[in-house]
Length: 202
Length: 204
Image (cartoon, rainbow over all chains, first blue to last red; front, side, top):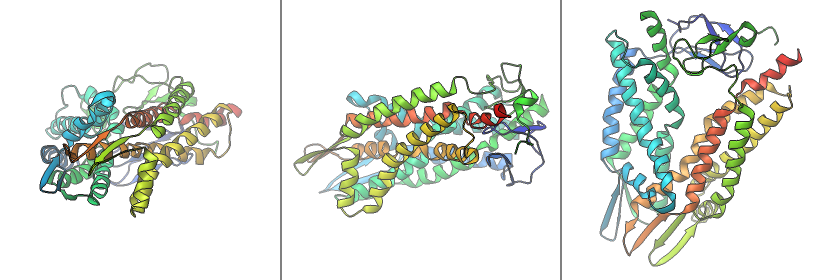
């Protein structure tokens, strides 16, 4: 199955191609500028749905358990992702808390919910209500989901504090690591294959 | 390479949201209802605006402290660069390099690359088009890693809260730095890489 249109246009140089059928995992490249035109998804819809449900579980764990715990002369302190966002919400720098809240909590959460909604209906052979709106929102969300950066940030914070205090990674960190990988797997362009199904059913 | 046809010459326009090839005369995509444009509107002036704004904010982002640390009775304020130097002197040169790359090299590379792309597109240069295309995809890919320092400061500030013994607080510099990252992301999004290749069309 390829995307339903006969034509593929390179988004980086406007070159026009006729779509060719691809095997899963294969990608077509633009001959003019070298950009990827279309990558045939490796995962089927049901597999993507399964990963989305896993991601939803990991999201709950990543946000309800502390990512790091520190202890210092008998005192201990733990921070969850939400508390880190709150740490930025003070005084003049409050807008930064909103940016962090969107990039590490809200955007991934919305991605998971929308994917679950769209894939769940698609696996049942239906078109999800609000299909177009959900697909457009997903597309706009993608650049603002920064979990992998957050993961690296946590590792840097661990090393930064590790020289002065004793630092223990929490359950939240492991869940976040898995969530970051899952989001990369499910939030790519592969969801665009739903457009082809949508066109076939309407 | 002029044998490869441009979509524009065939009356087709790409929908950026759902990748459908739309008829050039329709204002919205028939499949996903979002607005379609042959080129992103006012791409060059918008990108310049975001880029210049980001450059201006980059000055306070580097001169103002990003973090206030009060530990074991001694208080200090760190800027982004002094934080990097502290890591380096403390022996963790790898983390120092990582933060230096994310907070200094990546934003500067973005300023330089977007500036270069804008100037060459305005001059309709046909120099190294394929490489410039690749450069744009590269900065789109690495751009958001600059957010690293903001997240590190937030985490450390959330953790180190031992009242009188030691506290860490974020400072104004981190706001400016975060704004720089967001503005450079907007700049990269408003740049239309197809402008690089338009030079080839009009010269033929």
